[in-house]
Image (cartoon, rainbow, N blue to C red; front, side):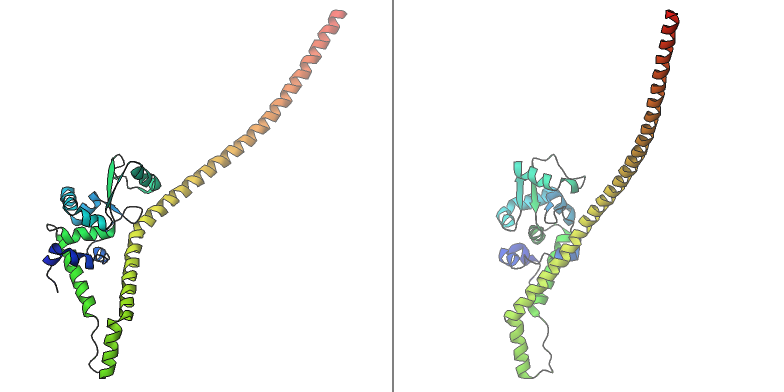
Amino acid sequence: MPPEIALLESRALRDSVIERTDVLDKVKVLTMLPDGLHITTRMVAEYFEVGEEAVKSLAKRHREEFHSNGMHTLRGADLQGFHRSTMDLWDPSYPQACTQLTLYPRRAVLNVAMLLRDSDIAKRVRTYLLDVEESARSGPEVGTDQLPFERILTERMLAGPIGNRLDAVEACLADVGSTLRELAPWMARVSARLDGMDRRLDAHGRVICAMSERLCDLGEDMTEVRKDVATLKAESVQRRARRAKRRRA
């Protein structure tokens, strides 16, 4: 197994394992932004339990490598559009007033793990990553009870295109699992918001029903008032007629 220090020194080795982003959740759950694809510099620092300046300094020294793995900075209209598209789902601690926002996809976060020296979490990610890579290279052992031609066939299947496709399928399944874990808290927040909306709609419905009943009562009261007004008008006409008759007499 390559020593853990090799990842710190060799970009070629880092590039060869950059797709193994599933190891991040094996060491510690990586909480994503509501879009399910990115995290901020502050969130990267919290994951690796270091200060933000350590992450910023690392990104500055290896800017080209980080950019190649998806790190990018939003400003102006791009930042406003990104914020607006997910406004209803932001964590309250999100710095909405910032003038720029650096985003890290999972590949860039793994890139940080392979370069960050003073973080126990990063060291554990590197160790786990190398262990997984070593296991993948070793592959399953061929049974000693197989005949020579069976061993040769098995080795060729594992080393050839079929083995590569199986590795790709396993990697995809690992990504699906990590993606589902990332979506779980987002779906929980969405579900909570929908429950809140249902409760508010129920409350509004009850208010509207009460207002409808009240309006019906007011309609009946207005009918009675109109009857009373008509009666008063008739009585007033009769009184005026009697007074006029008395004056003529």
